[in-house]
Image 1 (cartoon, rainbow, N blue to C red):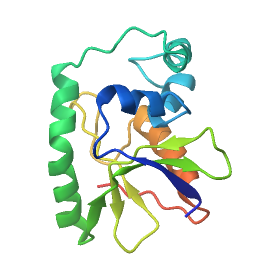
Image 2 (cartoon, helix red, strand yellow):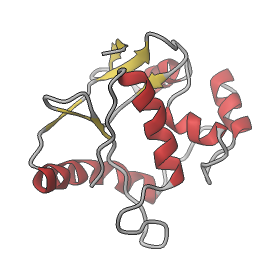
Image 3 (tube, rainbow, N blue to C red):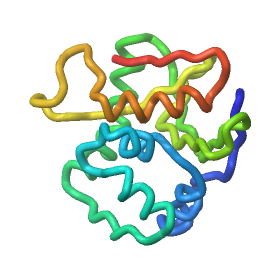
Length: 153
């Protein structure tokens, strides 16, 4: 693996997690910086890294996305026959230390990650990856290893 474990997320408070998240650029930041995130901008990502951004209020859509993560992972396993496990660590690229990855799942026995994304029917069609999701996965993909795989269902 071309990345190192920064810290376990198991016992981190949200505030502690944010401190580590601010120490580099993660998948959500990459989408904002690239102009692909309809909910954030490069400037707001910059302010976030400085600790000067307004706190994000959790919306119902955000809550549902987090709660549906387990369901998406389960359906992925059923559809592909693969097994996944939670990644309990924030990861950092060894080659590019500013790159962070906070992945949803690791695919067991493969050098691959599963990012569990949900979306509305308006934004999501059968076999497409939304641009913001693709940007998030690309930074994780780059930080994971030399031999890379993106899995989708």
